[in-house]
Length: 200
Image 1 (cartoon, one colour):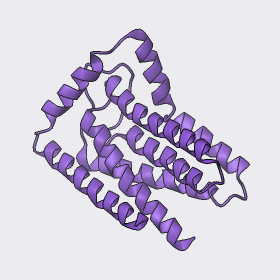
Image 2 (cartoon, helix red, strand yellow):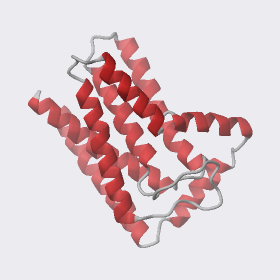
Image 3 (cartoon, one colour):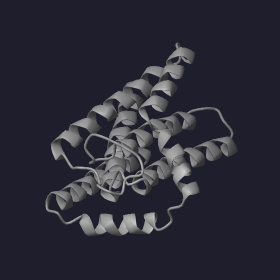
């Protein structure tokens, strides 16, 4: 049953990503992106801006690299350490490949922070879901209490969602970039966990 759900997630998110990609290529996604940005940007204030800058930092290259180094140093003989690092490297490669294929420019004139590279799909959305999602997967295999697991999974899931919202709020991504990034990352992450479960 669980495997069927995972296959469903892969197919559903592949379809979702494909639909967004088609809408992007046919220039039919702008109204959606503009409307979502207007809703989120209407809440802008100095405190929320500081908050989302901090949230987006939790998926920055510096932060993820630092956490990855800590994992390598502290979990040398742990069966999860290289899987966590490889997961990020594969996800990053996929993200850069699709950015190059679509070459979508970032939003102009609304950005609250500086970013380079192409916009679609969102790297922060992909990496956050892949990295923190895999940690959630590991937590599910640990001998923690139900309460501890629920608290950690809820907190990390909320963090991933907030990272996605932060990219729109800060004006460095369109909503479609973030949704497509999440969809593609789910396809990658579920496929990745299925593979490692198969080989043990």
